[in-house]
Image (tube, rainbow, N blue to C red; front, side, top):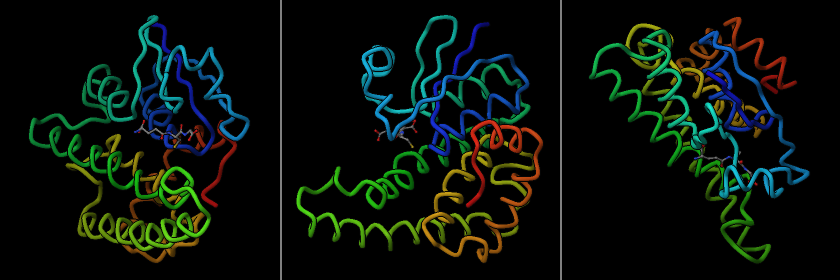
Length: 209
Ligand SMILES: N[C@@H](CCC(=O)N[C@@H](CS)C(=O)NCC(=O)O)C(=O)O
């Protein structure tokens, strides 16, 4: 199988990148520089007209969206290694990833890219300050969901744990005191200690800060 992953350092594509590395499958990566607008170049738009990372190309077929990419690789190809094996926990994994993608990520976008949601500077500032509170609430909700748990879903590492690192890292970089969120921080310490996660972060040239 020929697998190519288009990603940008530190972007949400980190979740799909970690999933591939955890699975020990052979894959190639293509790094995009979002600040320089690589995602809007014609050759990339031909693959992903939404101009977003990640995009996976699998034997010439295009797959977008972290949730779809992780479900295909971890759920389909991975044979349970980083995916729950029973139907209930599979549904829980999808449910959690859907929420991370459609709510937590979108809330962060309001904070990080308010210009997408309002035209003038004052309105953008208002969007940003509301999003700052809402993203903090998302982080607290994640911390609460992880109470008493060793891993996010079921009783072993899954792609959901890797996906949670994206939002923890973004929160840390935006000045939220994520390291003092006991449940979230404990899980992230375990995630950050994983060899595959270390390799991907080194490859992307990113740290937690
Ligand atoms: N729901 C999508 C979101 C993808 C997305 O928004 N990616 C961001 C990076 S985190 C992006 O490519 N941004 C490019 C831009 O804003 O121009 C997914 O999870 O795959």
